[in-house]
Length: 555
View 1 (tube, rainbow, N blue to C red):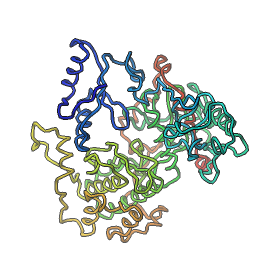
View 2 (cartoon, rainbow, N blue to C red):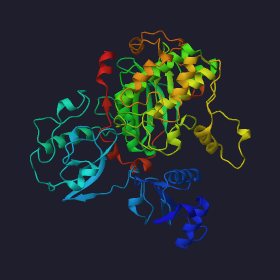
View 3 (spheres, rainbow, N blue to C red):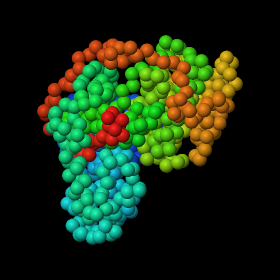
View 4 (spheres, rainbow, N blue to C red):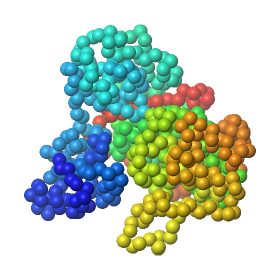
């Protein structure tokens, strides 16, 4: 490893040239360069934009050094460390190499575990939210990463639960029967072994049934309704009830297990709330993960905006109020959304909003809690994110301000003419500069209350921004003059008539979906056996899930 001064650091090509000099490599020799973030995760530095961003954030934080690691070789596969390279520099989510952590005779491995146990050291809940927990490969003991070195119980020593791991109090976890919990009448180790057996039972082959009782053979695949970089979304019908759902299909080889568990957690929390797309069930095969989601057939708000261009204030008030309720619901459960844009605002058959796509969500935040991951949609990034500062739930309220501005004015508050950008300046850098420095123009055609709510949501100081007060942020939003005529209780019960009802006349309700997708053949590509062999199914143990309330409503 080498630590380089930021003052002397140069970008990708120059950086690689310097590495070649250190390793005495020729120009044709392949090598890998990574920068290491503050949490210890390595990132390949070959994309110049990513390395620039790392340096920019380090400069903002006034770091004097940036840690760089170089290997005189490349990996044969993204999930395998470089030959001869340090395993500790391999990304922890890559999946094929699993490091052991030793403490007091235990050999711990990091894994994603269901929410059924407490840490043997601090007795707090272990697992959930897609978080990694350390599990002893021999005695199955579970501890937090931060606690494993504090463990006093030796491996294999059968102490009482009070000395090792406490069973979960049923009142401390949700009463959902689909969620695993340790029975109070079992010893600690017996209970853990039972949980492991339940999780292991869910690992099925292609075409096999998951432990939840559902598998691919239980659904008719009707149409393709969406596609992303790493996922396909199908319209499906559950055979036994004829209910229609959206099936999100993800190839395991393309996803980070941590991201999968975090998204699944948010989907579970969102289930049965009127303004959030929720989860019906999950199952898996050797190569794929399947999320069965609410089917929302009214299209997205982007399609509606393309027809209308500008919405009346009354319409914007209705949609933004439903979004506010969705945000409040998520924030109360410690979830930051971070992905608000028209594409992710779906309309149901009656015209009510449903938020979707939880891939950027951050879960597990306490009131007033912060994070600092640089992520989001460029045009919607809050100033504190651009500055590389710690940020909290306020970024969601900033996003809402941008969306409301676009609803009522028809363009982004940070719209600029690219022809005016300095040819030597990157347009993305210029956009971020505009977000931080430009005056936000509020046209005089807006009402006083509409102008005020935009100014409050788009306040660059999160301490003053509307909705950001730790104790009464949502109350402040509800009491703002722009929302003074909103009956929030009626709104949450969907008793307020939407301003627009989508046209849904086609047999499967596909009028509002892009024919580019719906005309595709409905099929799953055959598995590549060589790739399947490299997938570590251990990462997805316990993925299966079923929403029993949803099943009850079907019956």
